[in-house]
Length: 491
Image (cartoon, rainbow, N blue to C red; front, side, top):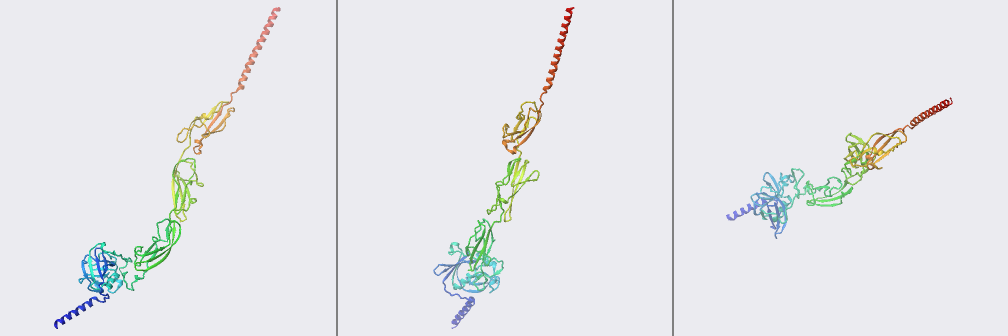
């Protein structure tokens, strides 16, 4: 009788012990599952009674988590952990302190007091030996795996995780404590918190590599970026960045928690960049005296292709004198040798400006002429030969170029040697007739007076008169002589 009584007392104490330890356990002891914990990959895989993997969970064990096979002995809805903190949905693995449980909370029963930092290291070694789980996964084991469920803890590789290790959604809102986003409690604010869809910028640069998804930032309520890898995202509409204009795009997003958001955003493809000036080139062979169109072959356009050529303004500056040179519809006459800066400017409709400067080097390409004299005298009635007074004639780079043709030299001014006096002859020299090589020389020609013929005739007449006088005198003398002779004879 005493022995029977002792047995009954032991059974009663055991029953009380179990009832105290299990708390409000609602799971049925079905024994339908086996749980395997791979501490090599921080992954939990649940197998059904046929050995088929049915569920995978990310976890945070530690290097102190024991390796071996265990059977769950007890469960707790809330349980105090090391360091005066509490966890939800706890299922004990071993009697000496190793459990499956949610991320710990600062206050028992306060769902919003979960440690965000502990939550965000999920998937890493972080516990004191227990196997931390997301709240939803800890609750699943708590609800579906009966006491005495077999638990195998081992160190394996990803090949030992037939379903792979799931990811999780970190909390990036900057809070110290918060709800576990997977906590199924109806009061969890994240269960109905919709994602946000926000345009990076409603203005998109022309020809940028933007796509509708790159044009927006999509986040869940926790501040995590949502992509097609971790959410369901559907896009209706296109953005053609090769054409300026407006484009409407509709986004439909569903996050991992099933929360949805739809938004339509209007984007505008714009050209905000500086325009471009093309065709402006430096030149080193401009001839002094030459007139050049500095706008010839120079064009301007926006990045998006609008022609701005007619809007180009140009300034020309003599670098030596620092003075501006006149420009008339693009035409500039370079009267002085040296360097010039040509500056082009254009302003686009988007208010952006472009400026480009080039250098023109102006060379004195005038021909080189040496005259024999600047003033000559010619004889009265002689033949005037204008070319004989040109000593040498060369172009600027010293290639000899004989001047005896109309292309190279032009003589202006007539010399009439039949009329004594002073004449001006102007020579205009040019290499192959090019205006910018032109140079002028002036020759003064003095035609000598005609020899004085009247003076010679007068002298001849006087001589003749003298001779005649002498002849008359001689005849008179002869007559006198004859007279005397006759008289003498008579006597």
